[in-house]
Image (cartoon, rainbow, N blue to C red; front, side, top):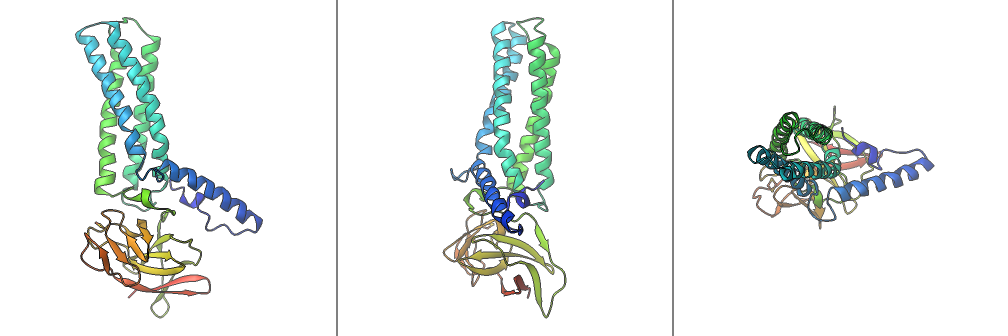
Length: 298
Ligand code: FES
C-alpha cells in the first residue's frame, strides 16, 4: 500500500475540486510528516517501539518468576506489563503506518515492510488474547495459566523475528533512512518510460512542486529529477558513495544531500560538494516542452 498518490496534491485537475483536494491533501500530508517525526528531526516509530518490546519481555520474566516462586504479585505484574505493552504497541503502530505509507511501491524492501507490519499486528492480537485469558480464567492467582503463557512465548517469538525484519529494512534496504529531513513528498514509484524522440525521453508532467523529486527509469538508467529554485535538474539516482537513493534526498543551496550518509552534490554539475562520496554524479539534460519534462538519457 502506498498512500502517496492519495495525499499528494499533484494530479488533481478538476476546477474547484483542485483547491479542496489540494488543501485536504496538504493537511493529511502534514499529519503524516508529524507522525514520521520530521518536526523532531528523528523518526518516531523506532523511538516508541522500544517500550512495548521491553514491556512484553518484562511480562515474560514475571511469568517465569511466577513458576519459580508462585505468588500473585508476579502474575499481576505480568498482566499489567503486558497490558502496557499492548497499549504502547498500538501507539507505536500509528507512526509505523505513517512510515509504511511512504515506502515506494517498487522498493525492494516493500515486501519486508509489509511482512514486518503484519507480524506485529498478529503478535499484538496474540498478546491481547493472552491478556483476555489471564483476566477471565484466574484459576490459580499465584501462577500464570499454561495457555496464556504459551501465547506470550509465541508473541515474543513473532515480535523478535519482526524486529529482525525491521533491522533488515533499515540496514539492508535503507528504508526510511534520512526521510525525516525531507520537506516534500517522496516518489511513490519509479516512473517507467518508453521510447524516445531523437534521444529525448518524455518522463512526466511539468507539475512538480519546489523541492519535489521523481525517480524515472530512462532506458537502463535510473534517474532522479529534482525541482529546485524553480529549475529542473536530472542526476543519476544512485549516490556514488554506497548507492543511496538521491530521489529521497534533500535539496538546499543548489545541492542535493544523500539521505544515507549525507554526501552533497551540486545539482547542475554533479560535482561532490561534501563527502564521504569522492566521485561526481552523472548529470542529464532536461527540457520542458508542451507541459512535460523531457530528459536526454545519454
Ligand atoms: S550512500 Fe550516499 S553518502 Fe553514502
